[in-house]
Image 1 (tube, rainbow, N blue to C red):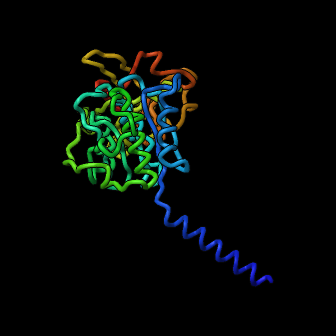
Image 2 (image 1 turned 90 degrees about the horizontal axis):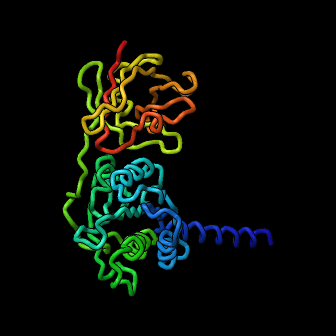
Image 3 (image 1 turned 180 degrees about the vertical axis):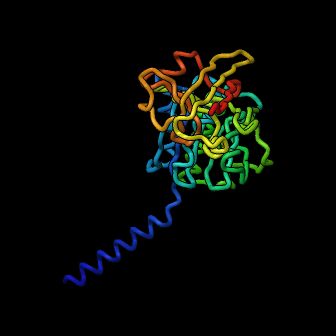
Length: 303
């Protein structure tokens, strides 16, 4: 009897393992500037689950500032690498909805998929992960049924619908639509660059919104070329549209508590990029600092 039970359990386990191994579902991650005050995001989720009710749908954020394509791109850049390969990201920050801008799905060289208008949102993703292929969504087959008269909610009718079909395995990537060149719309910005043996320039691409910390695009490897040591002093200058917004001498430390409450500090954030903060205070609010490709920063080592 025990042998029979063992055999049945073994066969059942083998079937379950086989079923799991052949599953081609991947997570679907949604992002937008819609907020959660109305039914827009819920509609996108509902459309996705109608494609496949077992699909795992997650929200990255829906609090992107209105029309802020740059920030949408940065949030994808910030989070994508922590998701399993094959994850499908749908990003809808689309001030050109209903115009001639293309609707695309970009496949990265490491196997992620990004569904988005081709409006600059995928600038940083393309740089970070590389472009394997780009396809334009064929709305004749990859559009929510009976939605052709809707011109202002492609996030629901085209992007969430196509993303869900791709994430669920209902369609292959090749079925998204025609293949395009790998040239996408890019947002120009100042790359981080070392000027000399004691000065680096870059931009403030994003804020750590909850606490008001200021993140830069200067990564640890570039910063290390200044041979920084904990306790070193740096002159930090922030300029926006040729206007000086901040200039002070700041200590480089490991953690916020290394300086007195309310004092500024220079540190490496969770992405190992040079950042500015005030200990237990809001740097961006106090100094009226924002973020984006027009916010330039210079960091000069003094000792």
